[in-house]
Each structure stands twice: as structure tokens, then as C-alpha cells.
Amino acid sequence: MSNGLKPAEAEQPHRGKASTLTRFALIGVALAAVVGTFAYFGGWFTPNDLTPARFTDAFEHVDGAHSGVRRNHAKGVGVSGFFESNGNGVRLSKALVFQAGRVSVIGRFSLSGGQPYVADMPDTVRGLALQFSLPDGELWRTAMINLPVVPVSTPEAFYEQLIASKPDPSTGKPDPAKMKAFLARHPETVQALRVIKSQAVSSGFDNSTFHSLNAFRFINSAGDFIPVRWLMTPMQPFEAASTASAPQDKNYLFDALIAQIHRQPLRWHLMVIIGQPGDPTNDATIAWPEGREKVDVGTLTLDRVESDETSAATDINFDPLVLPAGIAPSDDPLLSARSAVYSQSFTRRAGETKQPSAITPADVRKGE
Amino acid sequence: MSSKSRQFTALSRLLHWTMAAMVLTMLCIGVTMVVSLANYHVLVSIHRPLGIAILILVVVRFVNRLWNPPPPFPATMSRAEGLAATASELTMYGLMFALPLVGWGMLSAAHYPIVVYGSLQLPFILPHNVMLYAALRKAHTFLAYFFFLMFIAHFGAILFHTLIVRDGILKRMAPWNIRQ
Image (cartoon, rainbow over all chains, first blue to last red; front, top):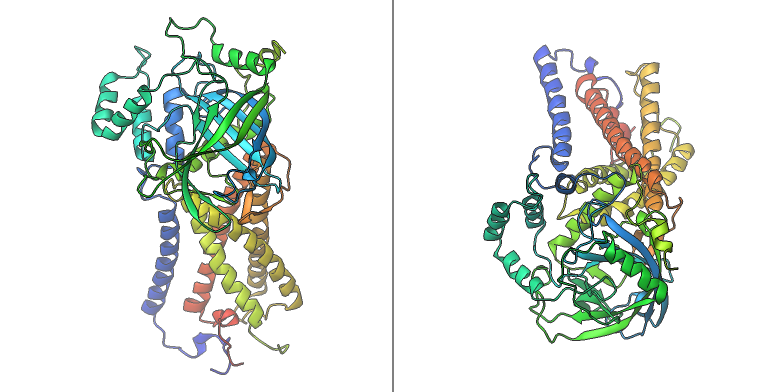
């Protein structure tokens, strides 16, 4: 063709009506295919799939949607301090945080559940979330709890357990039949709960051990991938939680933490557990065997406490997959799901009106 | 390129098709990752650097467009149609610029590190402010859906010209050289 842009009409004067209709139909099919593909990727044809939004809805379903606060670990206080690395972690990971020296840390102690004004109870799961600020501007965030293992191994099981744990409005407690049915379907949860219950609960945040729970991979400068878990072991002496009747002070755990930090900085050892071939990295319900090498890579010192209303930690999403070079996710399916759901929860609360925290700035100043 | 050429320059065409693939991939990843648990992290880890690449390339492309103006529209198009086509092209240029920039801004406002590769990351361009994050996050979604609609209109218009008007408009942007 000499002129690619000449209208085709002149060349094909006999093109019929039917042919034109077919061509219009073709355009329609092509456009519908594009829209359909896009809708397919967006999950429009699979509305029953578990998504970050449905997961976050489940937290709101169980504990209510409280404006401006985290959908889980709603009650908490901000803390800050520093991590002093002793250099022992350098052979395990090239992450700058492990080179001997000090990096600043900001974090948050919390209680699990989505109720921001819930009363402190000894056996409520305690959380410690941390952000390490590395010298080159990289960030490392880790969200840990005081359980040695996670009761579930998949996001789907977590969701099921969450729904089963919704308190019955008449009794204020979860329906035992629903929990029983859940446990019958999940023997791994029964096993994990046995491990969890075998460990004595400590008296406070200060003497709790906090676990990474999920496995990660460390990458050292030689390029070796090393399966790891980590934990923060307290330098404050263990004392068992009181088994007496429910504490009178609604905030007794946080009040004690505030008083302790005002008295002296609280410290933990960061212990890295080295996995051996065969240790499961994709199942957080299973603890690795006793006797795995544990490397003490440094000391965390927390010397400042703040109300959620003033702490910079309030505006941080402690996404466990915010990792520096030298630390990478494992194949644990909970990790990507945590990242996705934390992000959804963060996005929702970010745009909402903030409300006063259970632990106010005045509470934090007590005993200063 | 001769002044009478009816085809975009080879560089313009390369940029067009490369970015078309990148943008479509980006839109699909975006709409997939927000509903995904298992693949969320992997998809986000592609989404961010790919967005940065688009932001860089669109600047190159805009400069290239000023340097090498597009060939004329086919004679089958009225002046109004030509203006509408040019407006839609410039809108898509604007979206290719605004979407990654809003993404960068919203991650900055939330203090999410934007890792390019390894320990290399982008600086924060906005202060840590979650309300600002929430607004930009909404804008990001809105602009992405708007971009998808623009793409549908663009694709539909090309199909209409190619199959119904049959004015060979696609040859302007054909990846191969058309003899004039």
C-alpha cells in the first residue's frame, strides 16, 4: 500500500452491513476481555476469597471498629531507646544493624485485641513492636508477642479462629462450641496451645520474652541464606504472674511498665536462633527443637515511654516485612498475610478521627 | 525523520510499547495486590520499583514528545477528534507522572521505606502524617481506575479506527517501520 493512511472505504466499496456488525462485535469482545481480565485480577469473580479487607472486617466484627486505632493490638504505649549491637550477628547477616555499634529504636508495648480501653489481664497476649533506624536510613520493623509459637499456621486458620473467638453477646465470652469445632479441625492449634500453656506467664511487660514467631532468612556478606527466628529475652528477673483475683487497676500492666521505665531503663538481649536443615520455616505453630544455636547479637535498651497520643510509634505500621538488606522473609505464609492485613488496618485508621488513648500523657508522666 | 513522515519515530514507538506493557502490568499488579494475602509482599516489591521506572521513563517520553512531535492524524479524523485524541494522550502522560508521584508521596507520608533494590531506597518527599497518607492513598486508587478507563477509551478508539473506519491509524505507532 502506497499510503498507509488512506481510508479503506474507497478500496472496499462492497463491504456489507453484516461485516461491519461483526467488526463492532469484535471490538466489543476485545474491550470486554480487557475489562474482564482486570476484574478477574481484582477478585470480582471470587467474592468469597479471603482478602486483607475481609480479614480486617473480621477484627472489626469481633472487637468493634474503634476510630483511629489499630484493629489489633489497639491498647498500648510508645517507647524508645536504642539497640547496642555487639557484632556477633555480622557472620549471620550483612544488615547494618548487626555491626557493632548503636542504633536508635522506637517501639510500642501493646495488648492483643482490637479494644483500645480493655482492662489489662495477665494472660492477654502482650506485644512488643520495634523499629530500628539503621545508619544508612534503612528501617527494620519487627512485631513480636510473648507466645513461643503462633496458634495457627495459615491466614485462613487465623481468620477462622478469629471468627470463632467472637464473644457471645449474652455471656461476654466466646461460644465454647464454636471454639471446640475450630480445634477439632485444627490439631496443629491444639498442639501449639499445649506448648503455649506449658510456659509460665510473667508478671509484666518488663520481664516478658518476646518472639519473632515467624521464621526469616538472614543473608550474610558471603551470600549464605540462614533460616532464623529471634527473640528478646528480658534482663529483668522473671516473676510469675499473680494467680490471685482480677487486678483492680484496669491499666496495671501499663502503669507498672511506666513506673519501671521511670526508675531505670529496661533491657533485653536480642537472641537469634539458627535453624537447621529440616526445621520448619513455613509453620509458626511448631517451635524449633531445644538446643538450636542461639546467638546473643546485642542489647535493647528502652528508656523512654510515651502515650499513644504523643508517641511517634502511633503513626508507624509495624509491618514485619519492612526489612533491611540482609534480612528476608521465609516461606511462612503468615508473613505476607500479616503485611497485607497490617497495611489494610493502617490505611483505615490513618484516615479516621483520633480518640484519646487509654494510657494518657498524664498517666505516663506519673512517677517521672 | 522526514517532516512528511506519517509514523512516530523509532524511539517514540519503543517508549510507547515499553510503557504500555509496564503500565498494564502495573494496573494489574495494583488491583491484584490489594486483594491478595499470599502474594501481597511479592507484588508490592515489584509495584514500587516498577512505579519508579515509569516515573523516570515518562519524563524521558515527555521530553521526547517535545523534541519529536507526533505525525499528523489521518484525514478521516475531524479537527475536534484530533483535539480529543491529543487531550487524551496528554492526560495519560499526566497520569503516568502523577500516579507514581502520588504513590511516592503517600508512602513518604506513612514512612514506609521505598526500596529500589537491596539497601538503596528513595528519600521521603513528604512529612510523616497519616491523614495526608490516607488522602493520597485514596487519590492513588482513584487515579489508577481513571487511568484504566483512559486505557479502555484509547484501546477502543484504536480498534474503532482500525476495524470500522479502517484508516490504518495503527501504522503511526506500529513497532516495525512502515514504508512511506
